[in-house]
Length: 332
Image 1 (spheres, helix red, strand yellow):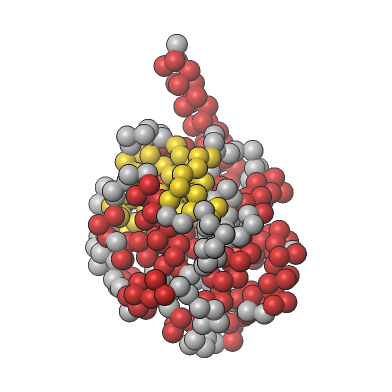
Image 2: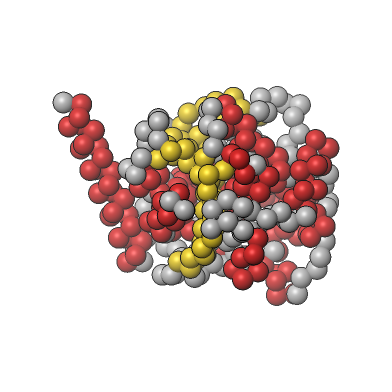
């Protein structure tokens, strides 16, 4: 009886994923009716982390990391595809999102990149995962890149949307051509107290604007946006986002305990683990050209351009392509 129920559940999930993928290819609106079965909580480092988990408990560990202003639902269609392939899929809320909370009110609300990467190492330790395949987009891609660069022994393989995103405060001080600076308008806005107040007041309107600019051909509906926007109600969300962007410009201090890690990252370390980088053909967000970072990957490496009007939030806009990359890189 239980086997038949499991079979029906699997077939139903597969049918939903196939239908959602077909809608995406037809250019029809994505609807926000898919969700994760449950969100678990675990103490890890300075956080109590909320995370979704799919697939067999003894499956190959896979950790998928979301970006800003998105959340775990970037992978809501990716997760069942990979769970069906035998992966143990873990999708955590980053600090400042969803049900993830700081354990102490005294902990700095720090958004610097090495702090976010340290959170994932702590999560792996808490879940007793020695080594995992990592995938990410936006902040999540940067975090996955950092993990693969600094802790290669913990990373089996990597899928990174928009490639090599490791930076430093020194790099952030270098001026860009005006057209490139224009794309970073929100970073300059966040550098002001008016910007902080504006994001606090209009965080949902702000996030929806970013979604539209970053993925101009993605036809998401209100339910899809609202499903993710709920995660921005986290009490530390604004502080983490503002600190992250101010830190990049050297306008906010980091924590001294991360100084050594940031020095290593500032040197632009090469990533040695097997990697597939992905880019959508309609990414409206700032992103490097693939030729600029190809040499940053010294292991087996492939870059894939995903066509069909795919924007910045690639895992949610092209879940099958993202899942295919995970399966491929795991086999390298």
